[in-house]
Image 1 (cartoon, rainbow, N blue to C red):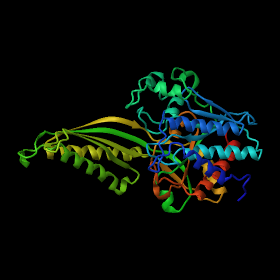
Image 2: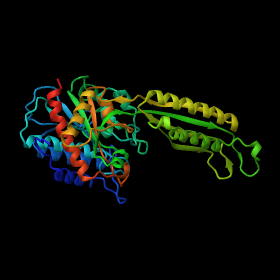
Image 3: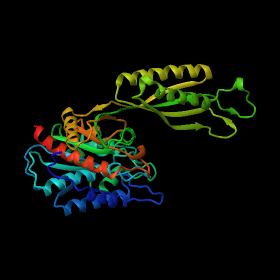
Image 4: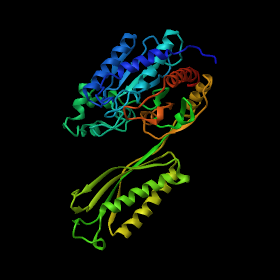
Length: 420
């Protein structure tokens, strides 16, 4: 292996441990949701770290944290690295935060070795990537690429406290009224974007591999399925007279499970993650059940086939159970392929450090999917221990983190020469 400069894994791991203390709870997880005190504290911690390194830090109008090296020699469009620092409730220490600190380590290592670059190297920590009580996810990157505008943002409020999102963004140094002028980016204003992230699954872990290049970020399809039966007395209504919405809904859920059991649809994930039953009383036959379907795949043909199968099953169940079942589209987000030039650089970087050239589809959504609307984007996955994520057990092994950070650095050097 011909390594130009080596990252310091111990430094990276120590910073990750320090950041994980912010928002730590008694259950061993981390609570660092958008707009929370821990979110603000993490921002201050990151800003202090970067400023101590001699970097310039700014917050755009949606409060994304941007970092630039004033001594960068490159004069081209910036190559941006980063991820997010917020967590889900009772989340883990690695999701997002590892990508932010790994980007920091790459930039610091290049500075320490005085490596000249053709492109300025910038870092970003996105605002509100995770789902949160403001009912929005991948917030910062959606604003950057224009998927969310000021009118959209002004409608959002905290579902518990009622606080407008605009207030929370202002508290974090942003200004929703300025997002069009001081947050949204013009297409092709960047040379490229790379996000490093834990896999959040166990494909790499089961294969005994440390890193993989993401070829595509999955499409996400969601719909609300409502089963209308007939509420009636639990004790006096005989079987032949029942129109039980819950038993029909149970069959619908089993039909969803059948989708992911089919060998020809192994690249499809389908889940019923939320169930709402009415009247929801122990002595009343359920009259209405509302289900949420989440279906993911990077293969549009398989998505169409799976949804057609589910619709047929729903019609069969409705007839059999004498209920009415309706399907309402909630989200249809297409798959997002990553940039071929960045995929190639990440694969070449892996090979340079002695790791296999492995490609995977990301079955979770990420900021990189929005950044791909603006520029050439790519992702690097780090092996996740036992596949745990969005929970306190979330972990990546130190040797996998070391490999991923070095893979990222080598890929940056390759891209710096290959990008226009």
